[in-house]
Image 1 (cartoon, rainbow, N blue to C red):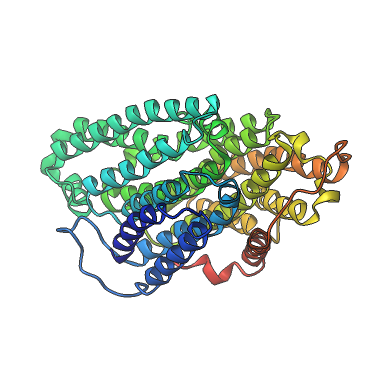
Image 2 (image 1 turned 60 degrees about the horizontal axis):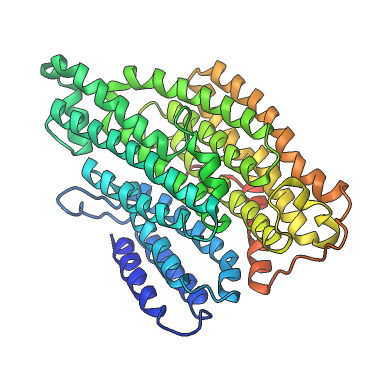
Length: 466
């Protein structure tokens, strides 16, 4: 609750900072504000709070853990907006304010205990993303991305809201715990058709937000057209908040309807893994490859939803937390390197990375660690993220799904190795110079590498946090 208030106040304060003639104070100011919110959020760990807003919002360890991920992700992402500061971007204060406001929506999605609060959180987050996707008004791709994201997001929101209405019609409540009791009540058995349609529509609405197949087709085009800095935010914070909300919905409100939604989630999981990995393997653009990679990782997180079997705690829930953290860190590292290279070489394809190992060893090493983590190679956080989720699924008897996920991981090795090959085995392009990297970006890249390796060496520190 305090995090939401601070983010809202700081977002408004950031708008006032935009009246300053210089952008130099905006980046350190935004980072300090987020660090303050991150620290305040940690103070809520193991603290018992009464529900807020008439049981619409709860602050517990689950909320604190996933709020911590989205805040940390944004903190380590901000240094890569340095080019906006250097270029004197006139809208930088608005960009930072929108990021802070979108975090308000993300925290609501993590801590909701009422379906209306879920809807409000999704809308706050989504509206900010619609604007940021089209922030580069001079680029037709950015305009196209914003339009596609807005139109398809509006339809998905309508479907989600219709599903919420049907759930209310079938149960008479929006509160998650009361929903669970009403669904399990024998006297409501006659309302099952309305209930099941409502659940299906909610799965579709949230599935769109997390880029789960077959509701993922917007992702490559939107990610490619959106400025890279905001694409990184979209592929990490939005996905983490979406899966935290998804898990809470299934585990708290719908455990009694597991027999209905479980086959649906399993089918979505297999389809997402297939289309995400095969689609990524066919790309020639690094940015589009990372977009399809984001889809494939949604498939692995869906395995966690299947393995949770309607339980908000345990190995599967902890696996989703760990995977979200490892995936976010590696993805920010990859997009951070890509943005720095694209700003300098004006290319976002694999050829734009050619010879980076010779001109910028730190950038090449960071991208290598990120790719290996996303591929699930040992001694990286991504390996244990996948291991925890697949182990939880195997314990629940979903052996076929686990085998399929392993096969798709092998496909992933192909496209994750392509940037590494380009950086180390391809010659430096004629006339190419070293990509400029300032001190704060260097420190951030080093931190991301250390965090990725630390999660791969000592995963037990966070593996059982939920």
